[in-house]
Amino acid sequence: MSSFKGSYSYAVDEKGRVNLPAKLRKYLSPESNDTFVVTRGFEKCLFVYPVDEWNRLEQNLRNLSSYDPEHRRFIRTLLELASECQLDAQARLSIPQELREYASIGDEVRIIGTLDKIELWDPKVYNDYKSSQPESYEDIASRVMK
Image: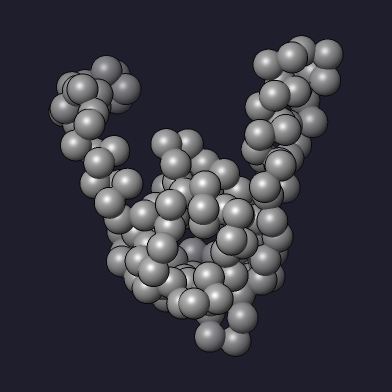
C-alpha cells in the first residue's frame, strides 16, 4: 500500500518527461514494478497511480453499473485519457501531450503526494485553486476529522 506525501517543484523537459522525486519513489511497492497509470484528475490536475493502486481502483470501477448513465460517464472520463507508463533509467515519467494540455502543464510541475496516488499540477493552476477555496483548512478539518 502506497503512502505518498509531500510537495515538490520540478521541471518538465521538452519531451514531456518529469522526474519522480526519490522521496516519493521510496513509497512504491515492489508490485508496482515502476509502472504507473496517468489520467485526468480533479480541478485540472493529473492523477498518477502506481499500477498496483490502479488495479485496486479498477476493481472499484468494475463494481459500477454500466446501466447507470452517471457511472458510464465517470468511467469514460477517467479512462479516456488514461495512459500506462514506466519510469525510465533516470526515474522520469513521460506525460502524454493531451494530458499535459488538459492540466495546463508547461515547463514546470508541482508534484503532490496524496496517499495512494500522486498529483501533478501546473504551479499557477494549483496556487489559483488554493486561493479560491471558500473555506479555511481549519474549518474543513473540523468537519472531516470528527
